[in-house]
Length: 428
Image (tube, rainbow, N blue to C red):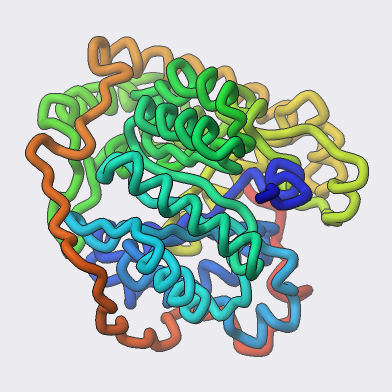
């Protein structure tokens, strides 16, 4: 077996649009979300990668519906955006990492996403199964990669960073080939930075190429109004005491004499900005969605600075625009940020503002972490004590209903120029 060329770190965009929010876990009705408008607007703003999973309810179907439109077909060739999905997790207490189910899951994802291949496939939430089960799935994904090209890059995802490290090390030892990518979530946030302090040295030693940081709000924990409550109720695994500590920290931040001090605004910028730097060693050189036109071949041929990879999650276009304003402001504050700001049309003053905002966020972040005290770097148990995988034998589930077009779509025949003519963004 041989790894895909070029390496994933040469081409993967450092900003990925996650679709876990296209799900009733985070929202009362996923089908009521403007998912097509979100995907179209993300592409128009330069986002070139989308992360999803069969476990995220209708997310794969909704993403596939958004991509299978004249607007996307006419303006964004398939090779110009990346699709990342997962195998293995079926429900909250069902996992199947068998070769048979892995093949079924891949075929189903290809159909839902209306594509001939998947750029990245993770084994989903690997802490819930035995190491040998993970190894079986990884080997099958690599076989599909080598024999059919249905999969380009293979990785694992999950919550406990020590488990991710142990599995990455085991797979390298057992197969002689490192994982292309390992994604962790809620482990590089204002509250918990174990992805950098604990996992990063071991994952690099295990030869892992790319390590994305997902769920920068800790699955919604770092919000002024608390964890999100969707149609499935309170799903969040955090203990009550940690939630109370977060609320206390949020109240402290609100009391500071600094503009834009809401804890979620601080948390998003702090995580993006710091992982962009701290995660650069396991980052990527793809299109950074800076607002400057980008050519894939230029990156592959000449290289560029690697940036730590982050996954954002949004539920409407307003959240998307706000997140993109933050992301681009961070890019303006990098060492070459003045050129980025000028070339993108934002202007040199945006770099000055970015550097000032960086200082403000650092002051607030330091104070928030001080208030959290012993809850800094706390990680909840995953799986919970007593967990039992209820999956006994592979079965093929009934298909989800085909989603109708989501509300608030962009005009059917809107041209790329029309939707990409976005006015200069107001900084936050």
